[in-house]
Image 1 (cartoon, rainbow, N blue to C red):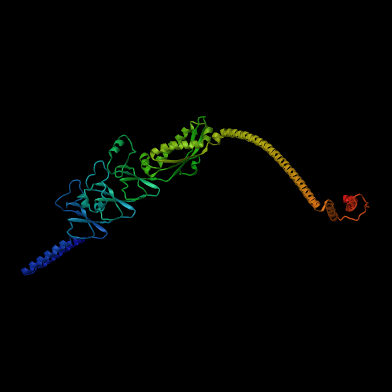
Image 2 (cartoon, rainbow, N blue to C red; image 1 turned 180 degrees about the vertical axis):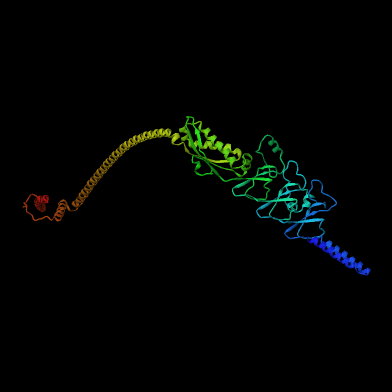
Amino acid sequence: MSSVLFLILGVVLAGMIIASATQMRSPQLRIAGFAFALLVLLAGFSLASFRYVGEDKIGIVTKNIGFTSLPPGKIIATSGEKGLQAKILPPGWHPWYWPFIYDIEYGEVNEIPAGSVGILNASDGQPLPRDTAYAPEWEEKDERLMAQDAEFFLGDGGGYKGPQTSVLKPGSYRINPRLYELEIFPVTTIEKATVGVVKSNVGERSSAEEDEARIGESRHLVSRGDRGIWRVPLLEGQYYLNTKAYEITKVSTKKHIVLYTSQQGARAGGDEEREIMVRTSDGFTFPVDVRIEFEIKPENAPLLVATVGDDQDGLRSIMNSAVRAIFRNNAEGVKALDYVKQRSHQESQSLSMLKDEMDKIGVTITGVRIGDVGNEETLGNLLKTQTDREIALQEQDTFKEQQRAAEQKKQLTKTEQEAEEEKRLATAAYAVQIAEKDKEKQIIAAEAEAQAVQIKAEAQSEAYRVIAEQIGGGNAALLELLKIVGEGDIEITPRVMVVGGAGGGKDQETTALIGTMLDTMIQDAPKKTGK
């Protein structure tokens, strides 16, 4: 609007100057007036070409008058053709954009907030390559240039019309809104204990994939950058991806538990299914409560997505079918009581079979647990019969144990008696040995005493003999008698009449003394005996 005002003002002022100049008499003044009017008109015309773009705006240019037109199929001009121009006006003053020749439309600067990406759809450019739905991805260093320089995109850049694979990261962009349609989406976030499986709709289609597609095979995995399901998933983190060109399926890598139980209604929406009904070889049908533990390892997530689509309904359907079939098939070969007794065997057998089956789709089975087997309605009578039988067998075992205990007690009593008798025999044997030892001791003592008496007698006899040789036999006898008299306190007053004899002398005195002593000993004998 200001440009038109400048032009009108210039024309009005020039007209007024020309009108004034025509009234002047001097030819020189009239010529000067006309020249000044021309300068004013040129100044107004020049000022009318200036366009101003605010700092937070862009100018979208449309050329109304031109000598060349756009080629068929093109909607944005890159070489000055008539029509919508690829180049946009940045903030500031821009000359030579005269009204009526150029229309300037003002647009907003695009902001991509943090945690988001911008997805572009180009309205002009080269046709997309055959068998592609998205334009090839730009190198990261050229992404901003591609978005903000429409002339480069449509010219030397060789941009393609249609959805762009490359995205705009958070920031400010001056985008020509007539070239690009911009949509803002959240950044792709892979949470903890989760991986993202990428199905790429762009890139080269491998020959192997084409061959398998012809035979209906959907499990082929491709390298990163190729079209198809990438064999390497996205790990925890944030990724600036075009979620239309790259379909992301998030798969949980946590351990999961699925319960097959009659209490299925206890937790609505939980990982629970109805119990498994099995039929054994002897015709019994009963429910089995089962607990299945499984996980999806990161490297197996692409195989799961390629096979069943996701880790929710598709996986649940396949797992339910496999679990129920395996448990029913295993039950067909055993009797009901054997099935109840062989719970651990059924668990290990089912685990092995289920692992083999689920490995094919990328699911790792980590555990199979069997809970309740049957109930009162289905196995009540059978279990009661088995219980009664077990009780009878246990009573028999108890009786046998009691008998065994009685026999052991009897044997123990016998052993104790034998031990007591052996103890007594040992005591008697010891007593005999002690008596024998006492006897030997007494004999040795008696022999020792006899030898002592003999030695003493022989010593005395030798002493008497030596004394007798020295002082004579009579004197020796007299000394011994005197010793006895002194030791025994014997009265030595003679009570015997000594009569003369043929020998006379000292022998007679000795005889008399001996007689006295003998008489005294005879008298004292009864007294000593009575003591």
